[in-house]
Image (tube, rainbow, N blue to C red):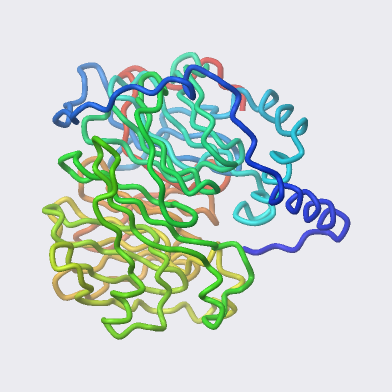
Length: 435
């Protein structure tokens, strides 16, 4: 939520942010990861998990700087935990010694962080299960952490001052990460952290999605979501919001989708064009997407380049209608699709529920009470939708067939992204974990 600072700190932060705005971006410290740029290769076919690996759910606890590792299906039993900020002291010293970095660090804390540091936004495992790759917004970087030793394999400082959503290519070899303050997406070799390329986006790049064949990356830029100018009259202040589709081999822009034009043509001039989480159908002919301030989602025909249908979901009577109280402009944030493509799972973030929606009829099922659900993914067996309850520090599974809760487990402070991944079969936690 948009939280006010104590007056003294507000003055200090405002001064630092002003100085940051006038100063040129600080150059990243030269490292092997930032200096080396390898030649992009044609994506390989998706690789099968290696022998001796265990499928798991990775849960990033954003305000705590940890990742809980759960069973990927069934009871979601907890297996172990990873400290994703083993270098926290070093990073904090680096920030405190740089006034511009400090200004952005404090800005993240008081705005998108809701008064907290953002220590893990997104995470994936490497194909061999030996490491997890984590984007850390407050540290403006991506790191690879060895799941056994807990040590950092490599670190990539993103351009600008904040890292955000990621995506992994179908073959597991590359990871794309949004650098939200520089309007850039970097694509990295997942094993070495070397940059294979990058591309420009609209304002505040957010979610990244690789197509199933690995040939395209879709990035949604959501614009400014942490200002108090949330009245529809001030929508024009939110910036350049668009979907940028690039060739995943050359990183050349293939097309730009301006949802403002499509929404207006569809008759929803009142809706924001800031595209939030998305879900493709299995054949990728349709895209279902959420937008800022809307309790529902829309259906987009990819080939026809037009919006076909909308679904408005129930409002929680207890939810304030004051838009400035909604977390980063998102009334609903989190959508996933069943493997068969017949059901959608929607996280009603500010309305404190999640629900399964029949894709053909768009009828919703039971509204399952959950606390500030922030993400929705699919369990390893494909039977359930798994949502992160950021308001209750829990992860909950909802059966696609019945729409009912089937499991819930406590995790760390403010879980956000939940991703399927792999760890070694006998793994029970990082030996170096101290949190």
